[in-house]
Length: 283
Image (cartoon, rainbow, N blue to C red; front, side, top):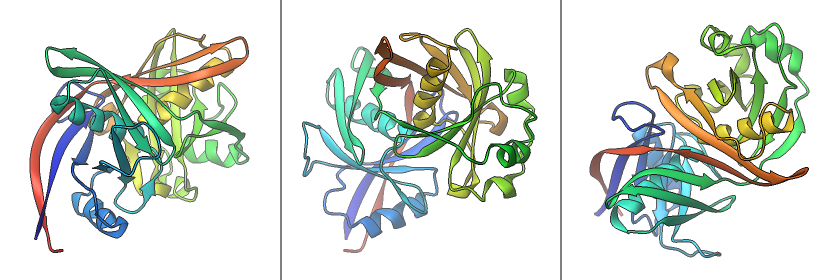
């Protein structure tokens, strides 16, 4: 029998039982991908992350594989941030480097004494493409008109950015989930101004009706605002998410660059450890 330890975290929050829940499996070396997938299905959280010592192809402290209950992801934001907090509880590093399917993601940690309290991760640079189905998407969302161009961002997960008139309009959304499920994408619908935004992320085509905190979408959201003149390089954006499904979360995002060149996309937030346990597996 093999005993596999895990830590339960709530990510993009400093309060237990809010934010986005995550299972972090430490010491996952030697687990087959099919076993990781089965464990993620057993945990039934939006994602579970499995940490291994190697082999690392780059200068990383840990290698990670990230699974939803139904598929592996090359990168996801809240699993990487949560894993950095778990590592940072035991190793007093100011920066934790985690290798994902989209490269090494460094996470810079702020501490109160030995305990991490906040982290900034430098995310994979997203690609940007035209989203061709704007009219049927807006109809499915119940949105009359988008306030900015509707575009597709890919940093591992693929997110479609839809800007609406206000945070209140975000809260009022009652999308047609069955129609949204026709696309295997995440739809980030957001509104706000002057650095304060509210977002809801719908991804029923990926088996998550609405996500409480989507780190991989927060970076593209900030980049979308910079590209369309709603924010400047270096502006720190505060993004609220999850209130509509009883899991309030707060994410931060900023974009570094010079002239017309983007040099980095960062997403930050807090996380709290809420439980520990172990799975007993037959090997």
